[in-house]
Image 1 (cartoon, rainbow, N blue to C red):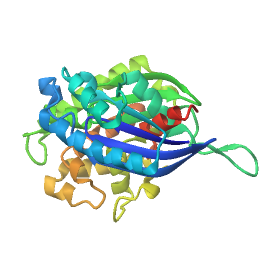
Image 2 (image 1 turned 180 degrees about the vertical axis):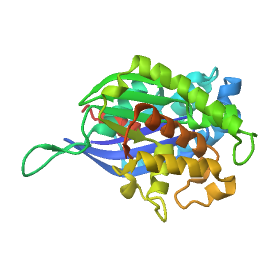
Image 3 (image 1 turned 135 degrees about the vertical axis):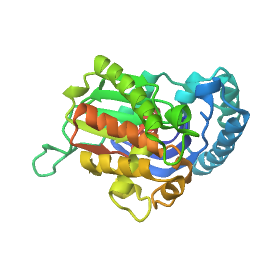
Image 4 (image 1 turned 30 degrees about the horizontal axis):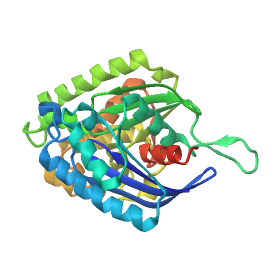
Amino acid sequence: MRVAAIDCGTNSVRLLIADVEGEELTDVERLMEIVRLGEGVDETGRLSPDALARTFKAMRSYQELIERHGATATRVVATSATRDAANRHEFVAGVREIFGVEPEVVSGAEEAELSFTGATRGLVRLSPETEVPQGPLPPYLVVDIGGGSTEFVVGAEHAQAMLSVDIGCVRLTERHLRGAGDPSPAPALEAVVADIEAALDRVEAEVPVREAHTLVGLAGSVTTVAGIALDLPKYDSERIHHSRISAEQVHEVTRRLLAMTHGERAALPVMHPGRVDVIGAGALILDRIVRRFAFSQVVVSEHDILDGIAWALAGS
C-alpha cells in the first residue's frame, strides 16, 4: 500500500510517501520545508497571512508529488501552532482545498502516540542467530522536540504514558531570545531554562520518565545536535538515524551553539537555514532533559510522527 503522510508543525511542514508491506515501511519520498507556520502565534494567538501562504505553497508542491507517485491514501496532521491558533479554520480550509482531505488538528496526546510508534517501530530487531532482541533497552522515553511543544512518551511496545508541554524551539526563541543579543546573554538563557525546568516539573509529576532505560530523541533540533556531535561534513540522515550521542556530547554541542553568533551557526555544514535562529533553544531543551533525568546518552531517530501516520494509514 502506498500512502502519503503530511505533518504540519510549528516550524516545518514535512511529507512522507511510503510503501507499507507487512512490517516494512519503505520511503518513496521524504521531504521537509521550513515554513514557520507558528511565527508569532505565542504572542498573537493567530496564524499570520504570510505564514499560511508559505505553508500552502509547500503543500501544493507536496500534492503534485502525491499525485505523481500514485499514493492511495493521504493523511494531514497538524500540531502545536494550529492547536493554539484562533483562526485555525483558515488553515483547515486551505488544506482541504489542496489535498481534498480534512486536516486533523491532533491533541498533544495523539501527537505523542504517533511519534512513539514512528520512533520505536523497528528500533529493536531480533538477532538472526539467537532470536533475542538486539538494540536499545525498553522501556523508552521518546522525546519529540518541536517548534511549539515537546512531547514526552514512555512505553515499551506501546505508549503507556504521555504528556505534551508548551516548550519548543520556536516558542522559547520568540519568548526570550529574539532581540536579546547575539549570542544570547545570560539573563535571557536563564529565562529559557526556567521555562524548561517548569515544564519538566510537570513531566516528572505526570509521566514515569525515570522508569525508562533509553532516551530516544526526535525532530530537527535533536538530529541537528547529532550531526554536529558526529562532525558530519553535511547533513546525512543515514549516519544520524539510530546514532547514539553521549550526554557529554549533548552538553558540549549545546554550549558551543549558545556561544556562537548567528553567522557561525549558519556556517555549520549540517545546519538547515531555517533552523539557525531557533537551534539554541532546541538544543537547550534536549540538554536539560538529559541533565534532569540523568541519561548517559540519547538514541537519535529520523523516524517520527510521519512514520507513525504512515503506519496508521496502512492499518498496522
